[in-house]
Length: 451
Ligand code: F0G
Image (tube, rainbow, N blue to C red; front, side, top):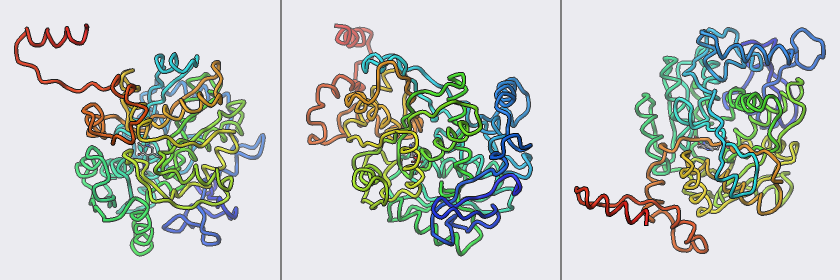
């Protein structure tokens, strides 16, 4: 470990420890809170460890044309801002990151906003944003000599972990809620060779159990309580800033589940600001599903001072989480950047997902909460027409094809859920139709559509 460059700081009591001193569950022995990676050398202006913003911007751009393996990763291209390894020779990469930033012209027009973009993290090697965090934490696991790694998951973390473990030659253990994860994700964990245990528990129960297991066996925990995961997951913030020529967008909208991702992106923007790479922060807003909204409730009820776990229910299974581990970090990001935290209904999620699909950008249901949330923020007058907005799409549409097919067939939502949205939904539904295998029948079907 590169102990002289980084240390871990407890988010609750501020205690500082070296990376090697972390407990297997990554909780502080003093207060039980989570740690954040900190780089002490960056604080001293003029100090030799403090990165030079102008030189970094130039170097990172140059690396786009480099033939070196490490530079082909959109995470390790920014390695000066995540010096967490003793040797970059230990990096486990699948060429993650450097994901596209798409303009959303139709949604922008409908909402009366000039500049609306989607940063599509579903375009990562295993189809979700988890890859950016997994390359970082898996590299640490490998460098520290672990043979086994493990995670509890709603599906995407397990897919990413299993793939990166396979690349690193490590064994992986996955705990998932039985029957509550999308098939695409489960198939990935199996294919990449993980030991996959389906438990009669929800995500929160799986994580609790795993926390006990890692205290008893030498298994490296790869959930986002592991602070190295968040170091990788902060790099899309660098990519977004770079794409905006180091002027950050006015708003970034992120889905909220276990709340690691919003915390990581907030850290990325904050570090860029502190190092002088950008001159301001975007407002970072977090959107949850209405049936899995503990952070929304916490901020409404006590301004984020405490969080009451909820029993989570949503078809957006990726964010079906009632007791998010990183909620304190997310509260700070929202409050420090002047963002909002809001929730959206099942019908709003399904409609937003279909709208993104109709622009040629599929995504997972959990990702679509961002567009659904943006619509609400616009309706409340919280976003001005001349402001720029980036939606963070977290997962690929093929992860949960069942959801999409059910939406288009009209079997996804209950009547009570669609009340008031019937016209919007039927305008978006594109069910497949059975047609005779003759030119005349296909032409007739076409005529129906055109007419
Ligand atoms: N979107 C997708 C597609 C996800 O898979 C997740 C989380 C989130 C959003 C929420 O991110 O937890 O950092 O707030 N999935 C985890 C998993 C929990 O196990 O794959 P978060």
